[in-house]
Length: 239
Image (tube, rainbow, N blue to C red):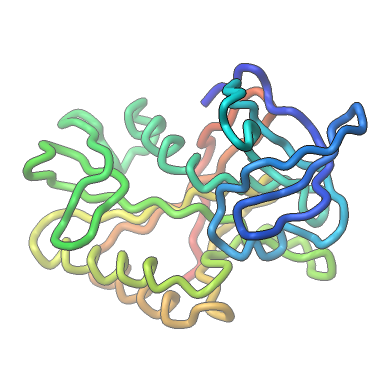
């Protein structure tokens, strides 16, 4: 995923009303940008000025022309906070056949329904896919007072939607089709991923149940840079 123009380095002052953030540019001017993240952004927003990256839509008619893409977090690492990026990053990697478990030869579809759920991606014919794929953005790393152990967790707040996706993935496997959950780990310090049981114990329990039922659980690290982002390596998952 290339950025043209490259992402701009700014200083984040505050995030508020969930979808807004105020930043200061290199010339000292202050602007408000769109923050496309419905989560708590725990350990991403540090409560003090911190470096950030923003993208420019190039559309002067947009109320907030710029978008918050990444933040410098504890221990000097970077975390990608734009939750619209992971689906595209994973799709790009699948289409390029870079994820061995997800073969694109039969076709790759976006936003495919299964029952009353909708999954981010599917493999096969859209009318009858053989594999359903759910993608999650993973950014919860150690805070400033924590050891830099490289274990990045999901979710950063209780997610009933995420719980429902897991139960539906289990149903997919029970129906005879394949189901895969991909943790898209947008954290430069990542060395492993895990469920955040301390935040959403129900999600952690369902994740282990899904794994035992045959749902494939994958985690891939994203390389973050001002000119591009891409999935670069698989990570171990600590269940």
